[in-house]
Amino acid sequence: MTYLTGFHAIEERIKSGRLCGPLLVAKAGPRAREIVNLAVNNKIRLERTGTFDLDGLAPDNRGIALQVDDSENSQDISLENFLEELSQQNRSDALVVIIDEITDPHNYGAILRCCDQFGVDLVLSRSRRNAKHAEVISKTSAGAASWVAQAETANLVRAMEDLKECGFWIYGADMEGEPVYTKDLSGRVAIILGSEGSGISRLLRENCDAMIGIPSSGRVDSLNVSVAAGILLYEVRRQRG
Image 1: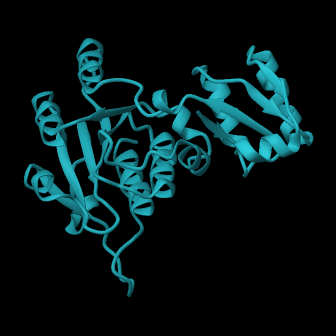
Image 2 (image 1 turned 120 degrees about the vertical axis):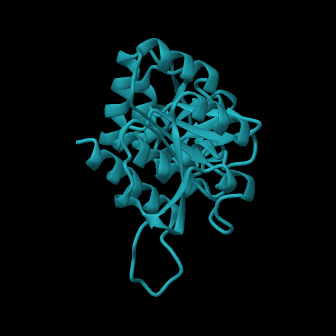
């Protein structure tokens, strides 16, 4: 089991209606008591516990901790179901973010927060190869992990082919790519974000329709991947009004 300890993470998980609980309560201050009331209103079971015991289960707690099942936290929907729903809705626009082996859970969480803010429809990652620390991800995302639809696949290259068959244009994020604002990002678009060290893997890069970048004049190599995600997704949102 995993325990969420961040106030925002706990609050958003409860609001999302996804399976969770019990809420463990030791010494709750005013902010924690607000979340206790939220849990009660949403019929989440409460368990009173001692501070010492709670510290042993969730060292970073601030008087409360929400128990969640880590195994069900990372995949909400399959890519196949997502594409089927898209077809049924007859939507001409959709936005997918593909995460390629990002291992830092703080980056992963920050990307999910950007995806929530800029209306990403699905985050797709490779099974068992990305950051999977649910507590850190949820806390860093400020609870956005409970709202953003996520799917996993064993084969990202095949997933890219499925997306293309459904009318998606796929762009890889790269510091040497063409300026993002020069591309038409309307319609169905997928953006690939590569790992912190080596970027997008070779096979995925070869299957991109184009590489896009963020023009910069800094002295360090590149932007942090989560910062780059926010800028790229903002440009998509800007173009779509």
